[in-house]
Image (tube, rainbow over all chains, first blue to last red; front, side, top):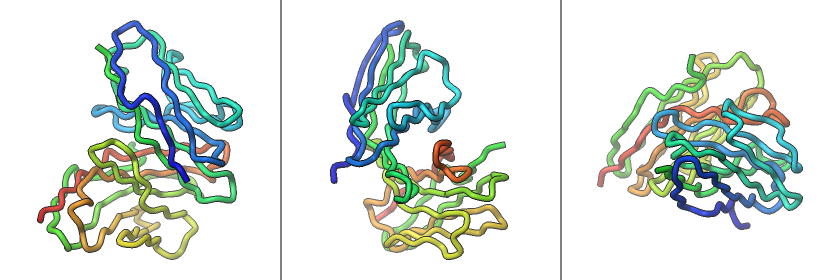
Length: 114
Length: 117
């Protein structure tokens, strides 16, 4: 089975721009979560989507948003980029209930804001 | 208070030796899950091992075992017979509650493991 895929792998933007990151979960997984990883704050939960609905949200400003499509693919959008948004953004998917209680991560998108 | 504490920023181990990475956690939930992930320099988080709060046996996955001491709220990762490819950042994480619609992982700061030849 193919793992979680994320595109693009690297991205460079300037302050004030917006960015969209994409994540395709493992086949059959309907839950997709996003995490931000920075050297200062470590790994922080952004949000989780399940069946096209946001179920859970971390403590991030409204500039961070996401959505999920009917095929479970998810996108994350950051508007009005700030220097502090430079980070590795990781997407993770989880099997349906009854399966292993584990999130499987993709390779991440490394975003640099100049 | 931090929910997940990893007190070892860095660890060194000789190839073929065993190493223990420490993790303590803080939660008032009765049901929770504990995870260890490995992150090589490439950035991908690789799942290693899982322990549920109600599991009585310590989890094992190949060369990885989780030393779960519930009363002490610790979930240490033991890697036996270290290999050069084990050099990476290791994160301990916790899922509080029973998961379901409120599933999120809280991570520790990580331990950078270096395996010396």
